[in-house]
Length: 211
Image (tube, rainbow, N blue to C red):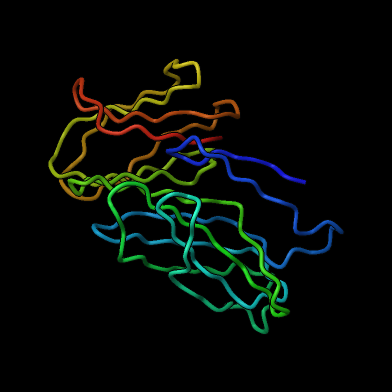
């Protein structure tokens, strides 16, 4: 069995094959997997709501969303790999590149079996040190936007549906450095959308996300 989903910023599709055909308890229930750009490094965070026989995680990095390499290994925080409480993890990538920086998680259980978590985090770095990241993706209620600016500005956030129609518009001021913005998308229908960030009539960024 396979499903596909789109990743922010590209038109590539990722295929996920069922690793649990018998319907047994999954080793990890991933509550969220998010990331943010901090200057010249990326901070990735994830939270599990339950872990069963879990040995740990590998954070994997890619610049093309096809070829990944492991950049960090974290053992499970659960006692003997088992927990029914929320557990939080964090890892840093200090070797980011200009353009797209893709991240995914691989989980390994104590018996040595592995699985990839379905969420892909895409953090984009502009060559001139401006950065933007959207999370969570897919989103349910509030889209968070981390924006690093080289100078203060008045900007407009526009959310467009796949037909190009503007379905959300937010005007706000940002300062030089790191800014965190939010857009309420709770009432939007399920589907693909594009976020546009504009200063005056100049388009600064455009990113895709799904709901």
